[in-house]
Length: 434
Ligand code: SF4
Ligand code: SF4
Image (tube, rainbow, N blue to C red; front, side):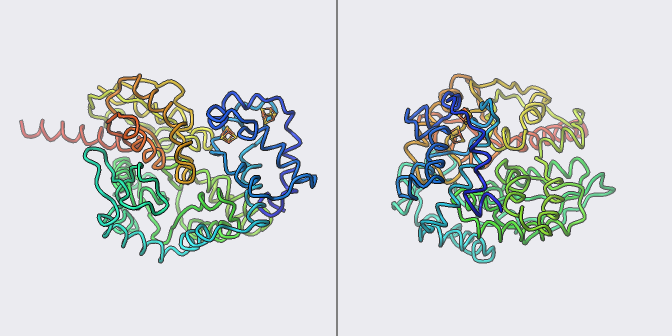
């Protein structure tokens, strides 16, 4: 029995909580709302009440359980090691079983699990986006013209007119490869931040790594897991396990903490009671590695390939990359190794930016209240660019800069690394000409 099949399965996790309240100090939602139901301890008490039969699966219960970013700050702080996010995700699945899925979510998730339909929809959207969005004058994004489920104040990044996977071959070959890897692009790099996706491929090529980019990959299903649609998430997990387990590769590269964590942990939790798929999912999970970890820990960062970049940057830790996949030092190592680049640490760099994927869509004002602290921390560094390792965080910080009047470029770590390699190539070419 998995945590997604029955609320009974989260009982052991609930029993670990001693109700000390230490989680209050770090919970971004509690810090804004100051209500017990907003923090892990309060939610745990509500779930226990439902299990005892003292509380029904009411709309109020559903709304309170929706108030969580799954940022894992409470997991890290908890002296008892309670995996709060596991409780939250399991409970959301139980809520969907008892109350059903909202028709809009049903439609969106149904499309996400059909990659052909989803790709067609996004590609068509990319061609006609000018009709529904008006471009922002300076930031990389646009405002919605109509309130179709999006807050009119928010900046949305433009969709690529041609997705990444349509621009690159399925296998990017190099002479005498030192490794062969697969690249899970995720939706943001495929449909929005195509340059960051190209930077991943570029950096791997520069390090003599052959890259396989399966055309049939699709959304990792994290948004679906977060909203409790376990049946759809299981189907998508199985599909990815099939796609990636048949590849002859040394590693599977991700460049988004949520995607990587979904493969590393959530697929295993979803498929726990299916021995055949669980075994396959475990093998896939063992190969998952973030691009910064792969370059630093597996390939080794060759500093002789790095050219100068004269910039001051600050780095934001995405929650799922840092507390989920444990990737914290290698992005910094990459940045600090680049000649001319100064890394200025912001205050609370590992504090959630308030995005949590679709949380910023469903709870826009609260998401921005949480995000304001991030913008203040960035501003205080006086850095001239922001770097992070997740497309959803890039999207949130771009919107936050617009809301709170800051205008800085924002990059994925791998884009900075690709720029540094290009600067070195530029130096070599200049020397050859002179
Ligand atoms: S989740 Fe952990 S930190 Fe929070 S009240 Fe329970 S034991 Fe304490
Ligand atoms: S995961 Fe984050 S938002 Fe959710 S209860 Fe824990 S600290 Fe709060």
